[in-house]
Image 1 (tube, rainbow, N blue to C red):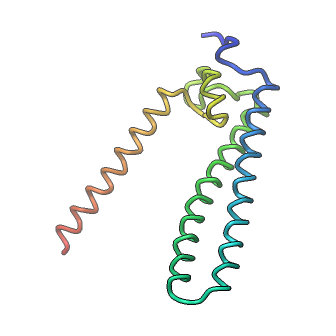
Image 2: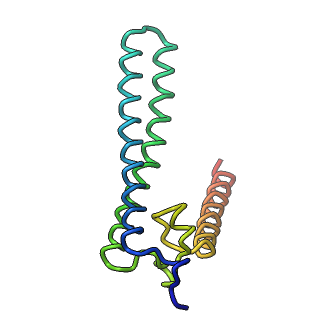
Image 3: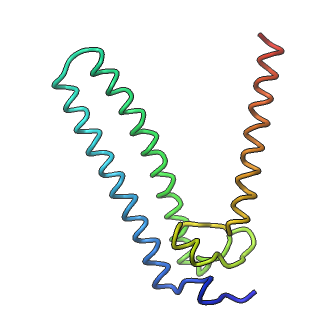
Length: 142
């Protein structure tokens, strides 16, 4: 299968897509840090269990969001490595072209939609098996 204009971005477009998404994620991390500082300042001005509980929840939510954003930054780094290697826009598994529409929606995409769906199904199956083994262990060892 040959790459076409519809399936492979040119280098300039690819670099722009990746850079724009990286910048958006970095800005979101900065915003998250600023929000956490503002929350801490607000709580320091208030007293009581309700304020501390609110802070604990806000901190947990910020940590979860931040973890997700850091995962996306690692994906950005891998996309930048593929750009440098000349393999961006091709599946890391099969080498097939990743459609431009997919890359526009997710500039860090490493696989075609079909390949990613298969990876996701396998991951869910592994998780289900781990959970089933854990339940079995708990039933056998109450």
